[in-house]
Image 1 (cartoon, rainbow, N blue to C red):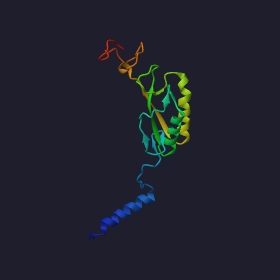
Image 2: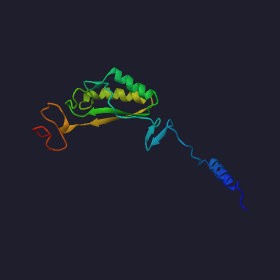
Image 3: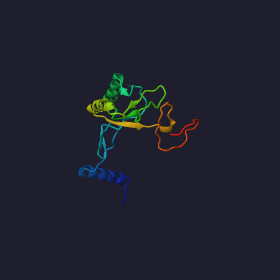
Image 4: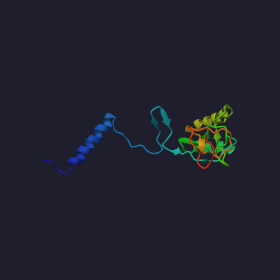
Length: 156
Protein backbone atom coordinates (compact mmCIF):
# COMPACT_ATOMS: atom_id res chain seq x y z
CA UNK A 1 0.00 0.00 0.00
CA UNK A 2 1.38 3.43 -0.98
CA UNK A 3 0.75 6.28 1.39
CA UNK A 4 1.04 10.02 0.63
CA UNK A 5 4.48 10.34 2.28
CA UNK A 6 6.10 7.68 0.06
CA UNK A 7 7.28 10.04 -2.77
CA UNK A 8 8.87 12.40 -0.23
CA UNK A 9 10.55 9.47 1.50
CA UNK A 10 11.97 8.19 -1.85
CA UNK A 11 13.32 11.63 -2.73
CA UNK A 12 14.98 11.78 0.69
CA UNK A 13 16.54 8.31 0.21
CA UNK A 14 17.84 9.32 -3.23
CA UNK A 15 19.34 12.50 -1.78
CA UNK A 16 20.92 10.54 1.07
CA UNK A 17 22.42 8.00 -1.36
CA UNK A 18 23.92 10.75 -3.57
CA UNK A 19 25.28 12.58 -0.54
CA UNK A 20 26.94 9.45 0.90
CA UNK A 21 28.30 8.34 -2.50
CA UNK A 22 29.84 11.76 -3.17
CA UNK A 23 27.84 12.19 -6.36
CA UNK A 24 25.69 15.05 -5.14
CA UNK A 25 26.28 17.97 -7.47
CA UNK A 26 25.89 21.40 -5.96
CA UNK A 27 24.74 24.31 -8.03
CA UNK A 28 27.48 26.75 -9.02
CA UNK A 29 27.14 30.48 -8.88
CA UNK A 30 28.64 33.44 -10.71
CA UNK A 31 31.65 33.74 -8.40
CA UNK A 32 32.72 30.07 -8.38
CA UNK A 33 36.04 29.13 -9.93
CA UNK A 34 35.60 26.89 -12.96
CA UNK A 35 37.56 25.35 -15.82
CA UNK A 36 37.11 25.37 -19.57
CA UNK A 37 39.17 22.36 -20.56
CA UNK A 38 42.70 23.63 -19.71
CA UNK A 39 41.75 27.24 -18.97
CA UNK A 40 41.14 28.01 -15.30
CA UNK A 41 38.61 30.78 -14.74
CA UNK A 42 38.63 32.81 -11.53
CA UNK A 43 34.84 33.22 -11.89
CA UNK A 44 32.21 33.61 -14.57
CA UNK A 45 32.42 37.37 -14.95
CA UNK A 46 33.77 38.62 -18.29
CA UNK A 47 34.65 42.12 -19.43
CA UNK A 48 33.77 42.38 -23.10
CA UNK A 49 35.98 43.90 -25.74
CA UNK A 50 34.81 47.49 -25.68
CA UNK A 51 36.90 50.55 -26.41
CA UNK A 52 38.35 52.10 -23.30
CA UNK A 53 40.44 54.88 -24.89
CA UNK A 54 43.41 53.94 -22.70
CA UNK A 55 45.90 53.81 -25.57
CA UNK A 56 48.13 56.53 -27.03
CA UNK A 57 50.32 55.98 -30.09
CA UNK A 58 49.67 52.25 -29.92
CA UNK A 59 50.75 51.87 -26.31
CA UNK A 60 48.70 51.67 -23.16
CA UNK A 61 48.63 54.73 -20.91
CA UNK A 62 49.17 54.74 -17.14
CA UNK A 63 45.42 55.35 -16.78
CA UNK A 64 44.88 52.25 -18.92
CA UNK A 65 47.11 50.13 -16.69
CA UNK A 66 45.14 51.34 -13.68
CA UNK A 67 41.84 50.53 -15.43
CA UNK A 68 42.89 46.96 -16.24
CA UNK A 69 44.39 46.57 -12.76
CA UNK A 70 41.07 47.64 -11.21
CA UNK A 71 39.11 45.29 -13.49
CA UNK A 72 41.24 42.30 -12.56
CA UNK A 73 41.30 43.10 -8.83
CA UNK A 74 37.55 43.65 -8.59
CA UNK A 75 36.10 40.28 -9.54
CA UNK A 76 36.42 40.53 -13.33
CA UNK A 77 37.72 37.03 -14.04
CA UNK A 78 38.33 37.30 -17.78
CA UNK A 79 39.09 40.45 -19.75
CA UNK A 80 38.95 40.93 -23.52
CA UNK A 81 40.92 43.96 -24.72
CA UNK A 82 39.46 46.47 -27.12
CA UNK A 83 40.69 46.62 -30.71
CA UNK A 84 44.33 45.66 -31.21
CA UNK A 85 45.39 46.45 -34.74
CA UNK A 86 47.89 44.34 -36.65
CA UNK A 87 48.64 47.00 -39.28
CA UNK A 88 51.18 49.79 -39.24
CA UNK A 89 48.70 52.45 -40.39
CA UNK A 90 46.00 54.11 -38.35
CA UNK A 91 42.78 52.33 -39.28
CA UNK A 92 40.40 54.48 -37.27
CA UNK A 93 39.88 58.23 -37.56
CA UNK A 94 40.63 60.06 -34.31
CA UNK A 95 40.81 56.84 -32.25
CA UNK A 96 43.95 55.43 -30.70
CA UNK A 97 43.99 51.66 -30.35
CA UNK A 98 46.50 49.16 -29.04
CA UNK A 99 48.92 47.98 -31.72
CA UNK A 100 50.85 44.76 -32.09
CA UNK A 101 52.23 45.23 -35.60
CA UNK A 102 55.82 45.74 -34.41
CA UNK A 103 58.00 44.11 -31.77
CA UNK A 104 58.28 47.44 -29.93
CA UNK A 105 54.69 47.00 -28.68
CA UNK A 106 55.27 43.59 -27.11
CA UNK A 107 56.73 44.88 -23.79
CA UNK A 108 53.62 47.02 -23.21
CA UNK A 109 51.32 44.07 -23.73
CA UNK A 110 53.55 41.79 -21.62
CA UNK A 111 53.35 44.32 -18.77
CA UNK A 112 49.54 44.40 -19.11
CA UNK A 113 49.25 40.60 -19.19
CA UNK A 114 51.51 40.24 -16.13
CA UNK A 115 49.44 42.84 -14.25
CA UNK A 116 46.14 41.08 -14.99
CA UNK A 117 47.54 37.60 -14.26
CA UNK A 118 48.99 38.83 -10.94
CA UNK A 119 45.41 39.55 -9.86
CA UNK A 120 44.24 36.07 -10.88
CA UNK A 121 42.34 37.06 -14.03
CA UNK A 122 42.69 36.00 -17.66
CA UNK A 123 43.16 38.35 -20.61
CA UNK A 124 42.51 37.90 -24.32
CA UNK A 125 43.64 40.25 -27.07
CA UNK A 126 41.11 41.12 -29.77
CA UNK A 127 43.12 41.30 -33.01
CA UNK A 128 41.65 43.56 -35.69
CA UNK A 129 42.40 44.45 -39.29
CA UNK A 130 39.91 46.67 -41.05
CA UNK A 131 41.48 46.10 -44.47
CA UNK A 132 39.79 47.73 -47.42
CA UNK A 133 37.36 49.70 -45.24
CA UNK A 134 40.10 51.80 -43.65
CA UNK A 135 39.86 55.56 -43.93
CA UNK A 136 43.59 56.15 -44.01
CA UNK A 137 45.73 57.74 -46.69
CA UNK A 138 48.17 54.83 -46.66
CA UNK A 139 49.73 54.03 -50.03
CA UNK A 140 49.24 50.28 -49.57
CA UNK A 141 46.20 48.91 -47.81
CA UNK A 142 46.14 45.17 -47.24
CA UNK A 143 42.88 43.29 -47.52
CA UNK A 144 41.84 39.65 -47.85
CA UNK A 145 40.96 40.12 -51.53
CA UNK A 146 41.19 42.66 -54.33
CA UNK A 147 37.56 43.71 -54.20
CA UNK A 148 36.83 47.31 -55.14
CA UNK A 149 36.43 49.70 -52.23
CA UNK A 150 32.94 51.25 -52.32
CA UNK A 151 32.83 54.98 -53.09
CA UNK A 152 36.55 55.11 -53.86
CA UNK A 153 38.54 54.82 -57.05
CA UNK A 154 41.12 52.35 -55.88
CA UNK A 155 41.58 48.69 -55.13
CA UNK A 156 43.21 46.99 -52.13
